[in-house]
Amino acid sequence: MFSLAVLSASQVFGSDQIRKNWPQAAGPLGTWQVPGDNVPVDWSVSLNKNVLWKTALPEGGQSTVIVWGDRLFVITHKPWPVDADPKLKPTGADIDGYCLDSLSGDILWSVRLPSIREMKYTGIYSDSTSPSPVSDGEFVWFFNASGMMGCWDFKGNEIWTRKWQPRMRHHSRQFEPILFGDEILNVEVLDKEAAKKTAMHKKLPPGEDPKKYWTFLHGIDKRTGKVKWVAEAGTAIHNTPTFGRLADGSPAILHGRGGGHAPPEMPYGPSLTSLSSAKVGKTLWHYPIVGGSSHYTSSWNSKYACWFHGGNHLVLDAQTGKLLRKQPLEKNVTYTYFDSETNKYRTKHNTTLRIRRGKANSTPSTNEANLLVGNHHYFLTHESHCIGRVNIESGKAEYLQVPVQVVRKAGQEENVLWGVALENDTRNSRGIDIGVVDKRSKGDGWGHVSAASPIAVGSKIFLPTMVGMVYVIDANAQKLDQSALLAINDLGPAGETWSLSSLSYANGKVYHRSMKGVVCIGRE
Image (cartoon, rainbow, N blue to C red; front, side, top):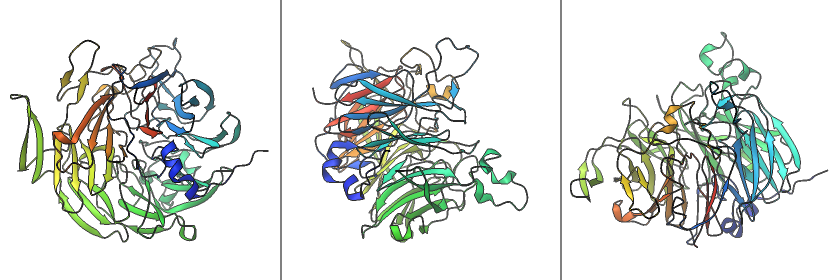
């Protein structure tokens, strides 16, 4: 009989654990950022610069690498057969959870999580491997977005598993599991039986409650896998809810509804849901938006919540949900760009810049990729290959154009590419092209892609893209110009590196996984 030790929130997020571990995709604080000044800033996996070890995995996946002490946890697809019929496209429902030694990269054990909903490998929105593991130092929980989760100890012994029926249509990168105290937060459809029939409320028989088909935050007992509570407000599958604390210290989670393909959860717009024991799952406030989107990580702090609505940037009062500012993101901006004629950066002030793709009400930022750090809300743009930021106090909007890719080869000068990246071969470590189901996976990863969330360590912000570039920005920079760009790092050879995973940080090291495997980055 196994028993799970209950860790309080203070233990999970203690100062020593913040330095040593990255226990979930959003980090030890659940906010995608941690304090620290010992983080590697400059590296190149293609040149083996500041790379401590690399480990190939037999198949690709999208989950973030989770770190606890000398253990790493990561998820891959069930390996696609080498001798598979070439007419078949890589799809499946089963995944594998791996445990590695964080010091050497050695694979220690693996487990399989079978499920029922077939999804394509390497989808640009998500796949079965998108949810990252979580750990509390004694146990690890693996998740399969196709409908299964489970708990294992650090030796690979199964504690419990739980299956649920996912909605059979309409998926996106969506939620990253969150460990808070003795509960795991997961997003699931409310009525599991109804989910087998249809995903869209407009197809329901007359009189049937559409909420049965909505997806909601579920609080799950980490010791047993039993559902303890369900949030009042729905959460669209496009959205990545984020944990945080209000000014009085009370815990809450920001999440939202809206997006493409008419997600049924209503009303569109953000909500703040309480995680306090007396009001857990209760809606503290919601801000309704007509025709809104939620294709991104929900960024907020104790004072402000940020949201995108079409071409506008919204700043809300985190305590009340009241709208404090709404401003266009493409007008009266400061734009620092690379002038190809002079090979120098230049800056335009009070100018207009197109950063959206598609319809007038389209989301301006690359899906998911945004983070509120200090007084600035950072994001990647759809168009122009820019890193943008908005000062949430003053409203000033700034953009910095960056190269879409830097090609590095030993003994050769760097080749900096602006505007167009090399086509990615989307091959796994065994040479199988598992990205052929969706040809958009071979693009540059900017725009209509659920890009991985950035992280911040101290004043350093790390923004990864699908082709394996990582832009490092100084959050203390007075201006968002070329001087704020500290480094452009690569996670592998150009044209051979694919990833929709966020980075992890622990004990002065950065960890990442691509389609081909896991890498540990540090100071040599």
